[in-house]
Image (cartoon, rainbow, N blue to C red; front, side, top):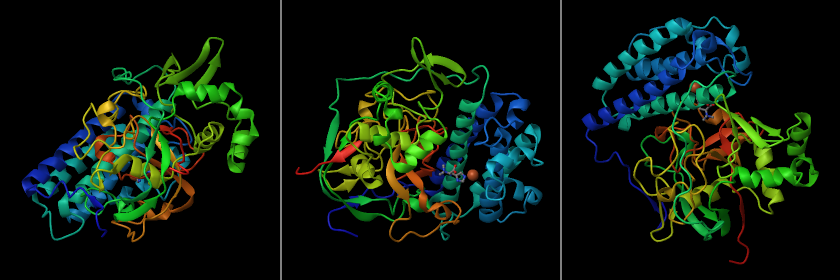
Length: 448
Ligand code: AVJ
Ligand code: FE
């Protein structure tokens, strides 16, 4: 490792096995409460229906959550007999594309609920007794953390399915907070030089976040907050969607082929821009980060603004680097787990919060809302870090490495705290916008 660059040591170092088990059990229980909320919110009809070709029926996500838990916690960690070896194939995401899932002989809603409950009871038995050392999969209860994150990731996917569903609102949450504290500078200067990217010590970090490595970044400016709806409307109303010069070749092709003229779920009314959000109609709030834009729209906006998207390394340096110590933090605000004052996470609100709503979540360099609100598109293709090793299975990350996927960072209002951190990496096709995706801009710091 490097001279003065360090990262926060493992937060589990001090935990006794009993505390680790308790921590893992609480995380699993919290994830299940959310899965239950998302699937109990609609009737059986809506659970088995496909709300969009892009998504699975909700009942597939539910049983798939149980299936992964059975595979890793019950069979692998626990060494127990399979509960339902007959359905492994149905819930293997690589066997059946999303579009085909409704026509499979899936477990019905009642069966799926019973199945995930039975798996969970067994997983808890395993958690009580499994040795938490001696094997990498169970070291620091990693497998339980991995399965917690897997469930939370599918919960976010189910939340995106809810957004695509037609009908009256069925999910409810208090409105997201408005801006707090004074006005913010538009941009922050991030000093050039190396920082420690990724992690080798975060106990529940997934394989693609590892290992920690020194990464040089030239000085650059980054927007203090994500780009808001109000700012995006300026681009839109100045004709940005019709001006070829802001778009990359692929972006323009996509814009034309699909006749993309505004963020997904928006429509123009005589009285301005409106959107549908989880079944409710509302005026597009000018002060919130824009959400449901593709990478190509983000790229076009940035060009129009005379800027560019940040690289993944730039995003992470802005989020984690503490210039006073040379240390890379776990989160922008420090090392403590996310609390409600830090970030808009976990479906606590059903929208992004206004730019400037989380002063307590700002990074050491003064960049706001890097975690929560909206996933942020970066300009970087999804690849393994130097020294990457797939663990525990190639299909989590490695099979997606390559130029087809762009990295997104920071999590959204629909991402749970258990499934996000300064090092967490998400990825998707650049055309996707049913996800809770937004962006912020950056620009070169030439000469500074
Ligand atoms: C990391 C969000 C891209 O949902 O495709 C879920 C997470 N992997 N089940 C996805 C995942 C396997 C993954 N993303
Ligand atoms: Fe999955």
